[in-house]
Image (cartoon, rainbow, N blue to C red; front, side, top):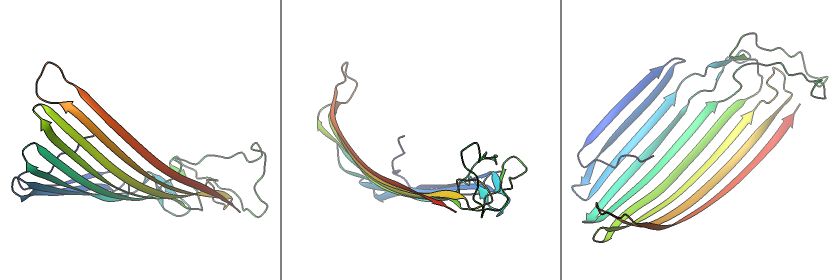
Length: 232
């Protein structure tokens, strides 16, 4: 995916999409020159909000919601002929309800055990796209990233490109895994990750009969994940 660079003339936009389940998705953006011919900037934002298509008859909440919001900014520096530097940063936050698409009967005895004596009667939702869950089914995610893309003409019909990027993300997921109206068991999942990449590329430009590209690429990623299971 290649996003548009900041424009050299002032411009802006606003877009709103409406859908069923009270789905509203809004995007706005503005951009233009800060220093004419040298530095351009752009800022975009989005907001998604709505109800999910699965209803929990126990709490009235809906699941599989599209809720989220975020920002993305860019600076395009052109300090001289043959030099182009693009800096970008973005941030996204997602808070959504997640869950099964419909209720299903769990055969406890076939699975090798029976519900605890302290559990009450298990009642399943009567209709498709309905569930009867007493516990949480939440998913909270946040991520941000930075990148620097620089291209320099080092000779006639020869350009050096450097792309540096960093991204950090974390997620907390709390799910009622028994999918029933009784507090039998569930899990809490924590995940964090960060990644760094660096690309160096030397390539011919223009419309010559022979195109040549040579480069190096480095990528490093660290992921930590834990899952805790809780029971009645």
